[in-house]
Image 1 (cartoon, one colour):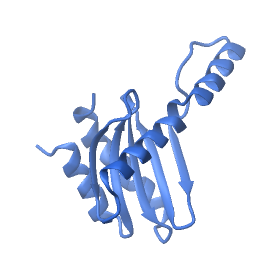
Image 2 (image 1 turned 180 degrees about the horizontal axis):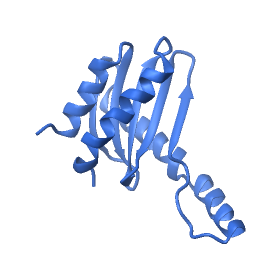
Image 3 (image 1 turned 90 degrees about the horizontal axis):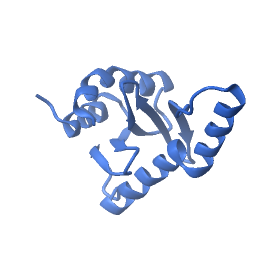
Length: 135
């Protein structure tokens, strides 16, 4: 059976222009698995990117807004952000929370030449493989 690192490697291999893929625990910010082909993606860099992703999905400000929306709607408090796409000068980042594992986030970093549909499709196809492996 494949592990999380193997599935991340598969995603990187299957997306032309992929630089790296990781699964992040949204509770702790720890990397559950990672694969990349960029020499300067050091452990400290990967940890910083994981922490930034946690802030985007579970940061204090995001949580405050989610609480306000829940209160206004009279609905139970929950994490509402499920997917984020972000671009930098040279990269695109695709991020998706596993539907059945709301504290696990998959992040794919690619060059800007990657087709948007290919980035999202590769992550969505990997979700069933990752689900049983994530806490």
